[in-house]
Image (cartoon, rainbow, N blue to C red):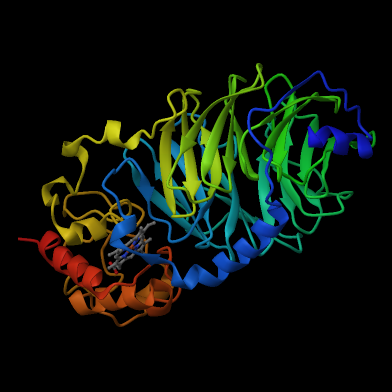
Length: 468
Ligand code: HEC
């Protein structure tokens, strides 16, 4: 009940409380203390992102390819693709039907903190360097880059009418970028980092959530002043429901339900620790709240009730999104893995859908090198007749000069390098990391720290890529 006292302290919106449900204890870690240093640590650790056998499981429904925490995920409206952004500075577009990476998007100078789909099928990504990029599938470079923020951008939202892209930044502003026509706009008022943005379903207002403990509702036509709603805790995320209700959460681990007019209606504890990310099912029934301690709470929105908690490997979950079927979820975690969940049972989906014939590594069940290659298989095919995935087909790679496979669009920088792939050169690339060995590569940064694992990988590759 602590938050009620706090809310009364400095309420400027109507904090009428109909119902308060407390199903677990309130969080005691202040997210401000956790998030900033973690980001700094991850940025520093980026070049040391290391793969180890222990972290590589078997389930191939999990999407592996990022070399750092997955900070953002968004599912396409047909449920067939997901785009992810990572601390490894890349964004990846994945096929959820084939469980492969289709495209690696590398443009940002820092972590990719936010991703969203646009109505026309393009993808927007935002980086720690403050830029927002728009990508057409299959193009190597962004079509458009929006510049203006002076600090990391951490949230993006596209308006349902297709006219605006909104970005929230740690420079304390929100920017509105026109997707069709109109002037760029800067929304100022937050006195701290802005961590979340979402449009209302009618596209007439934008809602922002700030670390300054305020939620702001901005009319898009700018005709009236924003509604400022004080909450009792720093806010990390916000979503708006199909009926206009606003749902926000942050450092105290509680979910706050707020009316379109800015009245606090109810709250429910979702996590014993700060909530980092929220997602809403499109039918308006469920909310998913991802926490710094690695659990994801699934909440019945109308009952304001915590239904179940999905328990992952115990590392922070940075991002969460619902499939259009409203029953399944994806999460992005600290270990770089994108996991799929059944939101109805709380169980991971991986084990249920692994059917061996479709698993390209099924024939190598007990091969330790094939286990290391689990980290590569989403991006690289091994059979000569297979299509390229996000990375070039590796069939016949031993003895092949770098960037010479016909029909694959390599980065320009690689075409001028004098490397011939062998067990030795491939092992070296993952000892020092692709960014050092092949500067300018699109391949997400990853290292394999154990010499034994590197040897197992290249022995496996020599066998599995040999063309008759
Ligand atoms: C998320 C996707 C992704 C993952 C995961 C990935 N790669 Fe790559 N890889 C790429 C891309 C993209 C390129 C092409 C780089 C470019 O053109 O900039 C590449 C290039 C390569 C090349 C050079 C191929 C050539 O024809 O010159 C090798 C070898 C390679 N990767 C091996 C691996 C191995 C081994 C792993 C796992 C330890 C791995 N990759 C993981 C995307 C990936």
